[in-house]
Image 1 (cartoon, rainbow over the protein chains, first blue to last red):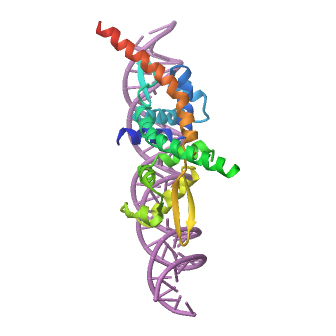
Image 2: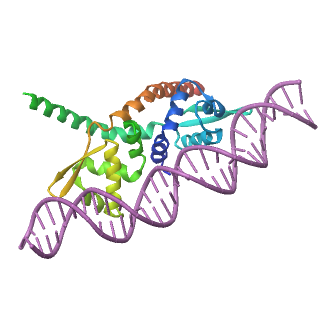
Image 3: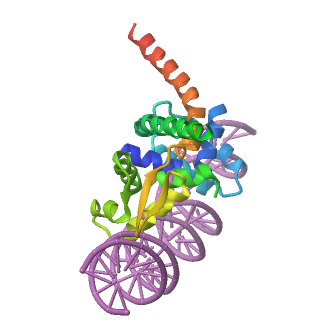
Length: 105
Length: 105
DNA sequence: TTGACATGATACTATTCGGTATCATAAAAG
DNA sequence: CTTTTATGATACCGAATAGTATCATGTCAA
């Protein structure tokens, strides 16, 4: 799966986005992430795998635990794709605003 | 479904992102969008509905045709959510780069 | 070594999703 | 009015997805 697709796919689930928010504060083990959800560790592990496939997190082993960390480069493809539209949408938005202004007068 | 969720959901499918790319050039009817894919108009229509639910496009009727247009404000919630990480990830990336530089010396 | 703990992996289930086929509705053309 | 064209809506199918349950593996501590 192309990087941009796996990343968008990973971001599409609210649980996974919540996990990313948690990891912003500090690195967490699977068990620590799972404490914050009402689902099994196995389910959380699956979400972490999807996030890893999407390049949004990296994992490293520390003893018998496994730490999950935000990947600083992971959001790149997503931002690049969106910025392509952002320019266009900024332009459109400006036109929209000027239309509204024109209607007011 | 909360706006940010329906928007991320809409962006998760490659066909729907391709549709957004097409609509960047000009507004298109359902039939015109469907010409570019090897699937039925009904399938394309479903994708357009998901994009509309996500606030990424708007539709207006012109006679018996229905024009699909990029919504300039639609990407807002998505960008806002991502920017929350972008700051953080920019910071991390800077640290990562400085680490690499340090290793070089 | 033995036991406890954290994770990995697999099989299984219910739901969602992408897609097709089909029929109904509405507008333009003659 | 009748026909054609563009879309709307619904039922259905197969694949992917999110989740659980269960068992295997590996590591820390005593």
